[in-house]
Each structure stands twice: as C-alpha cells, then as structure tokens.
Figure 1: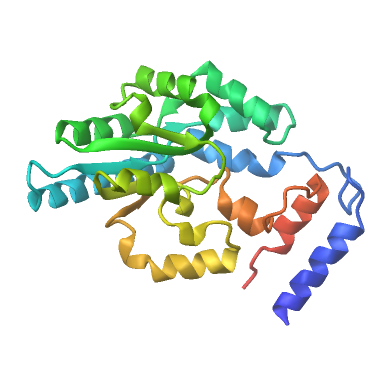
Figure 2: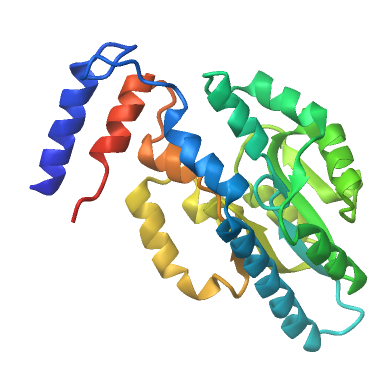
Length: 266
C-alpha cells in the first residue's frame, strides 16, 4: 500500500507540473537540492573525520595484510579517483552557482584546470603504501582523454605512481570489472577504495536502490576489511541509478518530484 501511494504521488507530481515550475508555481532551481551536500563536504569537520577514518582503516588493514606476505609478493591497491583521492566539490559548487546540470564539457574543463585538492589523508596513505612496496592503480571513470591532466593534478598533490601503467580511465564502458581484472593478472589486490559501490564489485553496476541495498547487506563482511568506502553526498549511482531510476532525461521538476516522493516517513 505504501509503495502504491508513493507511486501515485510521483505520477501526480510528474504530470501536474510544467517543465519550469513545481506544483506551487515557483521555479525549481536546478541544483538547489545539492547545496547542503556541497556545504557539508566543503565545510564540515565530519567529512574530514570520515575521510581520515577511512584512510586510517586502510592503513591498519594494509599493515595486517603485509604481516602475512613475503617481500617478493606483488601486491596492489586499487583506488577510485574522484571523491576518494581528490575532492571535486568546487566543480559541484559551480554547477549550483551557474544553475547548470553536470555535462561532459564542463567536467572536462574542470579537469583541465587541475585545481582539485586532495581528500584528507589520501596523500599520506598512498605514499605509505608505496613505501611498503605496494603499487597503487587508479581506476576511474574519468574519460581516457582526461588522462594527461588527471595525472598532472595528482602529481601536483604528491601522489605516487604517476604514469600511464597505473592510470586506467574510461575508454568505452563505465564498468570497472575488466580494468580491475587487468591489474589482478599481475598483482594480488589487497584493498579497493572508492566512494561508489561499483568501485568494488560489478554486482552493483546499473542496479536500482533496493538491489544495491541488498547486495551491500550480502557483502557486509568486506566493508572495512577489503572494501574501504568514502563519503560522497554530492553525486553517484545512489542518485542516478537509484533515485532517478537510471533515466537521464527527467526534467528539473520531475527530479524534484522524485526526490520528495521517495522520502521515507516511517
């Protein structure tokens, strides 16, 4: 019954509004909904604490793993880049100020500026791993055409393994499994770090909210053990594949309606 009522609410809101105003007649700011999440990432001590906590756990796990390995073992850490190694909240702040949705052109331009800062704890952890003889592979869904500026941005920040071999960006498919498997052909991957659950397993790829939640429950033992998750309230599959149901052509009014209709009240 609750699901039927929620669906009825969504349908009513979606089809009773025009493209530029909500049912109250007021314009819907395109990115107003993300103001608080960007504020939180940029200003809250809690964001910094959670990032440090994630890297502290990663370091502790790495130390535990290394105790049982030989020096000759070829070990690797796989990490996402955006909102894991670097912080792109200024780009998301620009979208709010300029009243724009994400688009490939503006994202590529932001990358060319090489202004993204390091996530708290990132530089220290990855250099620690390098000092221990563990290689770091950066697997990101940044476009492969962005590789040069991405490498330069991370080099400016002092990250290790800045070379073509260690950067596996998106060429065609956004699925990361084939790129993870490329690393696994020659290395034992001991940790995976990311802000999106698809950074860890293909089981999350393209899945709706309920399926993603069930899979997270099934893999509960891996989080904090092999999978190290970072906070990102600004964007991700939780929004595009979950909240917006994998559709990219919702109008701002429809997105606003979906966000409100999917609130859980009890």
